[in-house]
Length: 139
Image (cartoon, rainbow, N blue to C red; front, side, top):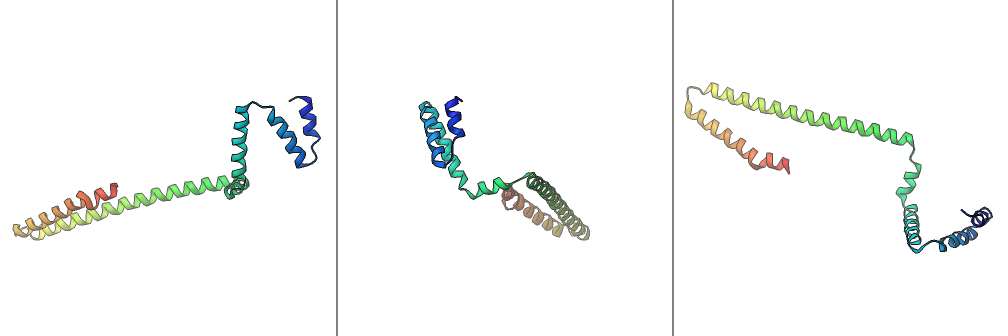
């Protein structure tokens, strides 16, 4: 920075003087740099009025630590929830299979009833896998 500009910046007393000095410096820049500075200042003026920018100015290390801690806790709870859902699904499947084995065991002397129970169960499972449960959960 040359001495004239430095002296001008040091002698600024009012916002109008500051604007005049900055405009003088701005006029000396090449056209491409002027456009770049206009874009930057426009962006800065837009974000300075943004309420989010005010919140971001007030963030400190403690807020970030709290956010990270809460995010980690949220991830742990989400993992625990998925794990419990899988366990419940396995228990339900085990109970249904135990019930089917029980029905087959009770009606082992009557193969017509066992056949109908197996077909009904197979149809129910195929319907669940074919679109009602499996395909819906994948989308």
